[in-house]
Structure formats: C-alpha cells, structure tokens
Length: 216
Image (cartoon, rainbow, N blue to C red; front, top):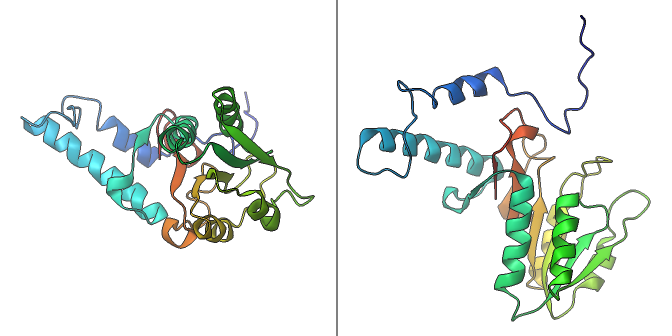
C-alpha cells in the first residue's frame, strides 16, 4: 500500500534518525540509562553529563543561559508553568495580563483559568493581517499589568510576530514577556537577549525530536 505524503509538519514531526539513535543510547544497560540525579556512581554522572549537554544545546538555540533552561513535558506545560507561575508570584504587584485572541489553546485556557482565580486578562484582537497592533498593545498596558504573552509564529495561519518590537514595549513598561515559540524554534532565528524575552516555551516534537519533552 502506498502511503500518502505527510504534510502536517507544523502539527508534529517524525523523530530524526540521528535523534532516535541518541535516544536509544539512553535506554539500555550499555548506554546512559542511569538517573542523572544519582551523584554517587558513574551511571548517574554519565547521564547527568548528557542532560547538561542537551541543556546547553537548547540554550545556544535561543541565546540563553543553560542554567535558565527548565525541562517540561512539552509546550503546553511550559505555557502553564510560565503564565501561572508569573501570575501567582507577582499577584501582589498586579493581577492583569495581556494576550492575543488567536493564541494557542494552551495559552488561552491558562488565561481563562486565571480569570476564574480573580485575575483580569485583556484579549487583543488581531488586525486583518493576523498580527497585533503594537500601539493597541502598548495602550492596553496598565500599572497593574504583570505579563504579556504572545506567540512567535501562529500555529494556524503562520504569521510571524515582531517579538523584538513587543519586547521593547514590555521592557519600557517593566512588564514581563512570555513567548510561545513552539512553532518558530529551529525554523527562524531566536535571540532571547536582543528580543528582550523573559520566558519562552519550546517543544521537541515540532523539530524532529520526541513527543513528551519541552523546555521553558
């Protein structure tokens, strides 16, 4: 039977054979199967080294410090951890967040949950080109705004947001910026420092990695 051509790579990708080979080397007795948290034997040391090398690779991809990389189960968990974490940690400073009406469901659902907890969320309408008007974004920022959450590349229509310009606005107002970069990482250049991004969500299965692993 001839299989159809797979064209849904924005939804998920197959694991690259080189990645699969690396993974297999972490599953068996003659590989790096140890617990990286086990500091009393060579199996743990070897596994920890592999984990830290992976952390360095992710950090280089987005120009971040490897110590800042937190492993998650995927972009959905990363989004939840970032948005809820900021909201709960900074709730005494403010309880207002800003996002886009066409963000990923993982972001919108998280914001709706925070609304049930008493937070206020402003959902910006995109312009006809699919992007948020930066003047409207800046106008929506209030003294009690603690976070702006915007995706880099939209998962449905593919528009690319000017994250660097958004970062200039949020930094000027001392508001944190979270970016869902699940669709952009590995495809277009990312530099967290020049983009002035505070938190970024990543997912392995969008870039030929395994499902069930992500980063923040």
